[in-house]
Length: 160
Image (tube, rainbow, N blue to C red; front, top):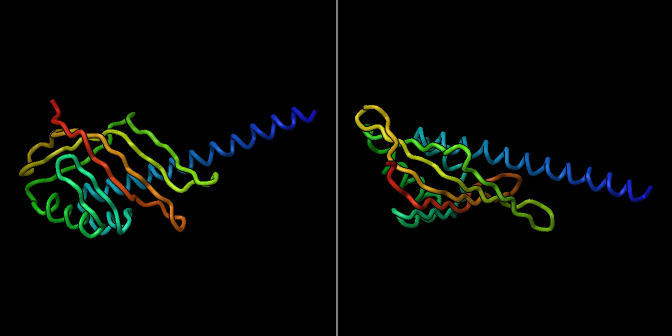
């Protein structure tokens, strides 16, 4: 009888653990969607709420950008400064991966990776796919809030 109880409670606790993982992943997916919606609409005020003050952004073509102020300024003054040029980021469905980081069985971070494409609209002409890349985002949990601490955008290539 004790073996059956052990198996039952082990399975029950595993089920709860998995649900917690699912909730964390769903929360990150929601935050990621909101972050990129803000990026695509050049809402730099909203972008800032999803990243740490000491964010590190690594880009294989544009180099390193350190700090929230510098990253937000870079987006505002480059990608969002020309009304005749609009860029939109889109996640490639089916490429996302999530790895939750734990410290003594408590989640403290999550690695989110995948692929994305960038679409351009120039002079209000038809939008077209310009490039693709891979990404890795390190999300950290602090004071019950998830924010991005590090962003890697790499392997940028033209779309053929």
